[in-house]
Image (cartoon, rainbow, N blue to C red; front, side, top):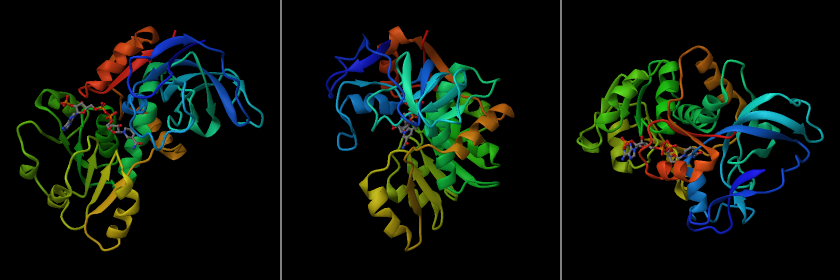
Length: 315
Ligand SMILES: NC(=O)c1ccc[n+]([C@@H]2O[C@H](COP(=O)([O-])OP(=O)(O)OC[C@H]3O[C@@H](n4cnc5c(N)ncnc54)[C@H](OP(=O)(O)O)[C@@H]3O)[C@@H](O)[C@H]2O)c1
């Protein structure tokens, strides 16, 4: 099968399509014939050497986390999926060397979800990782009916879905994005927009219940300004402080800080897929690329300027 692989971590020069054996699903896994996969910054961040301490399994690695496709084989003990089932999901790119920018991937069953009949492979692949992330952001930020929410990075993959999840929960959303993206974000339901290029952070209004930082770049002092004494700040890029220091500081009251670490979450996936079915959420796809042009797709993702998602079609 074709797979987009690299043999050393540090730069993307060696990333190439290779012909490798189709993986065999282990116990508790399904083999998925990938039909579409979407780009997430973590895919090229791992390849370029970020997160070295978190990455397991060495090289070679096949890039890619998100997928949508068809189950073609099942490992022992699997009872929840059968051959021919359409599925979506993501794999853990830190722990697995076999990613989804390939014709096949072996996937642990808790990372796979049944794909509703009315959701196509391209839309499903775009949604998997950012959909679950957006719900986790909203859960950690306690976003609910009438919450006042600020979404930073609202035009990107995670941000544009977070805007819609928050709105679907009944929140009032202020979106931070460059002016050229405001019409797009308003079309997704944002109540108001602020241009980060012309409005300094300290001039942004306060009084929010939750700040969902998908860039993330909001300093702690500005978090306090935006949230007052009791709000929740949630970042998509947690660090050691997020898990070791912030939980202790949170006990003292004041701004509550949290970080998302993506993991399988059936309830989160059901929530986003449900919103799609109700017509309350759409994953915007900036561009599709065939797997053979994956390197171009990666470069576009690395620009940091994607509006919505980039998706790879796997013929
Ligand atoms: N913890 C987790 O489990 C998890 C899961 C998913 C993603 N992440 C991380 O979350 C981050 C966002 O991911 P993503 O997929 O949304 O990235 P992305 O799609 O590449 O984000 C691109 C968007 O960011 C906007 N942007 C860039 N600089 C900005 C700024 N200073 N202020 C406001 N917006 C800005 C850009 O808008 P303009 O063109 O208008 O600048 C563009 O639309 C990444 O670091 C990713 O690794 C973490």
